Amino acid sequence: MAEPDRTPGVGRSAREYSHLLSQSGLDRESVLNEALQPSVGARSGLFSLAQCLEQPSLLLSQVGIDYPDNAGPRAVRAYISVLQQDLALSVIAPLTLRLFRDGHAPLPDAKRIFLAPADHPKQTVSRWFQLPGGEGVDEETFVRSAGALTAEWYPVFRRQLGVSPGAYWSSTGLGLGAPFSAVWNRVDPQALCQLAQGWLEQFQNDANQFIGWIPAVFGEQATAIPQRKGCCLKYLLPEGGYCGTCGVHRKERLAALTPQKQTTTPGQWQPGR
Image (cartoon, rainbow, N blue to C red; front, side, top):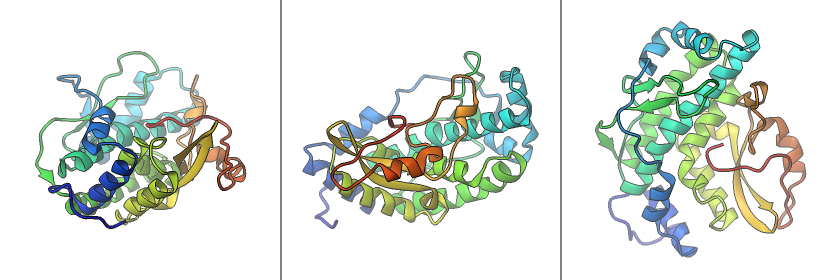
């Protein structure tokens, strides 16, 4: 999808993304500004991701404190898995959005990423945050370094915290694919799927193996969704339910999709889920 460089300062993938959006009358900066959540000001942290990676029992203990009604090891594993998804969506996703908007962004930095206290019982979203600041890097450096960092974090989440490969890497893939999720129903689905999948392939981690971008139709509208090949286990939690991209229903959803005449069942996906 080559085109003249009309957006100096951003990387190749962001330029291709900008070109795709322009074909649908969309402005890259405006779309990404809308997708970025406004800053909530100063936040306190219980411990950093770096501390968690060094001492995983910190997160296990915090789950016991924050969710005292969890029913045994299976529920603890589900909470950890959903919190890892929150790490991807609350930290990696906004950094990737900023990279596509500005052409540079800080890397996810375990020493600057913190778990915030829960604002209310059973809260599992918007728990992780990265402190403002940090040196921005260009697209090439971001891809190389973020791919390596997420691969470095994986063994602790897998072996010490029990997060499955499918859950970890599909959640990571959702975070890294945030710019594409922002326009899931606003641009040509086939072109978006191709561009999004190609973006994930660049990271040289397993995110691309556990996310498959597919065209789908909601009602009469052609869209593109990131189909997970794993499950975050949210459905095991009280009032958890299934995400619209849940790998539990992957085969059923894919079987219902046919070219130009697709439906999605069950669960309707929304960006950030």
